[in-house]
Length: 415
Image (cartoon, rainbow, N blue to C red; front, side, top):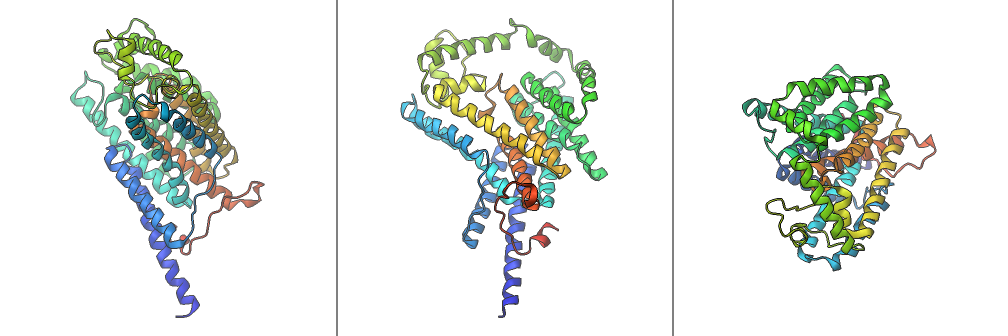
């Protein structure tokens, strides 16, 4: 066989691997809002396809990112705390949480052109829209209950918050009418579903994210936010209005519980300030400090920073905070460097969502909610992919382009 024939065969093989990986990622994106078993199995499938392709090609496409040192700092803090854990087997099991961060790198390596990026976004938004419609159907059947059609209300609120924020951000990207309808429709459906979950922390997170998006893209529309909130409040049943009114009432039961949990968490941190009690559920330690807690036992501290302080101590809090800072830096840098309108909207949306996620995290341990945090890492991974694609296409911009090895037949695959 001549050299030209060998190149044609190699191109076909590369194209087949690209398509398999691409469609695995697309399927995973669609499944993310639903059952964790489905999305994680598809995540594993996509990772195995990528690993097999790397072995076949005898190379590794994973590039360094500005976030690496932040992830390593958080992981190092976890390892430092490990020998001092009050429940070492559980802490070892909880290390699997870091595997989810691999979603960022898988997306960055697997999505190598704009068409596959759009397909992944289409799939996720379509899945999120269907998830939200399902939630609205649940509300129609059970109007006096908080929406919890697949997950509990807190998880459903986190999922719809991320979906609504991402869809809202992508509404500002120019594109075909179908794209605008999908983004706008998903933003509306997910926002309604979020409101009906009545998870106040997630609603605050979306409010923070939307405020950032509008402040950057449409400052005048910020004035419409209070009107939208008032209209949404007017549509919910009286039982849910009562919960919303109790948001700032310290005597409201859920608020009172959180204040007690936070006070107890500070006491635990005071007694274990350096490396914490280990990355464990806090039930046993909570009972030790609050023997008369009754049924209101805290398995986590309902605040990201306090939970990290309790479980990993000052060292963990420093590593965790540094990770957050590095992710914020990268997302803002990706937005400022973006020349493609889709990349600009995606990266700004990811920045706003990461901010909103941490606002939500002032009232919840949402980094411990696998269904929700997996979607967050997926969105950040898409941003990493768009950043790498953009840099590879504009090497003259003054920044070193990450290594993106050309794959034979990539043009045909993207089409």
